[in-house]
Length: 202
Ligand SMILES: O=C(O)CCCC[C@@H]1SC[C@@H]2NC(=O)N[C@@H]21
Image (cartoon, rainbow, N blue to C red; front, side, top):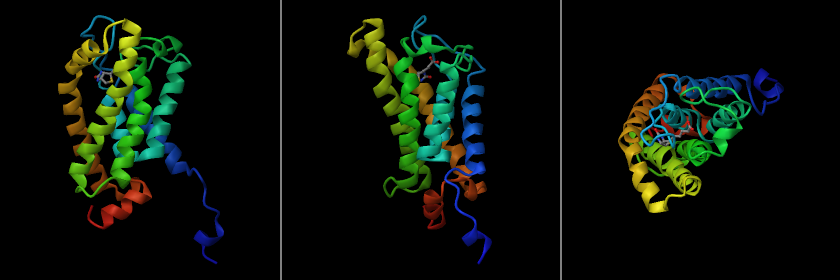
C-alpha cells in the first residue's frame, strides 16, 4: 500500500489553511495605504478590492470565500483591518456595509469563473472573472445598501459609484496579470480543478 493510499485525505490540509491565512492577511495589508474618501464619509476608494480579486483568482471559490470570511470576522471582532484603520460591528451598518459583505460572494464568483467558467483562454477568463466577481457582484451588493443607508436614490447612488470604476478596472487588470503569473510560476498552488485546465492549456 502506498503512503497516498494509506493516509486519509484531509478535508482541509495545512497548505490550504496557510493559503487562506496569507490572502486574508494580504487583503488586510492592502488597507495600509489608507482610504480615499471621495464622498465625504460614505464609501472609500481602497486597494483592498485588489486583494479580494487576487484571492478569488488565485485561491478559487471556497478558499477565497474563506479568506474573506476570516478577514470580515476579524473586522467584526474589532480589529482595525479596513483601510483607514477601521473595524468593529459599526462598519457593517454603515454606507459601505453592502460592498464589504459583497466581497465574499464577489471573491467566490471570481474563483468559480476561473475554475470552471466558460471556454475563454486563461488571461481573458481571469479578466472576466475579476470584472464579474470583484466589480459586478460587489457593486450589486454595495449600491442598494449604500442607497438605503444614505437615503439617496438607487440611480444617484449608482451614478456616484461610477467614481470607483476607473480604479476597479485597473485593479481587475492588475489582479489578472498577477494571477496569470502565479498560475504559471506555481501551478501546484492553484486549486486542483483549475490545475487540470491549466495542464490542458486553458
Ligand atoms: O472599508 C470599507 O468600509 C469597505 C470599502 C468598500 C469599498 C468599495 S468596494 C468597491 C468600490 N471600489 C473601491 O475602491 N471602493 C468601493
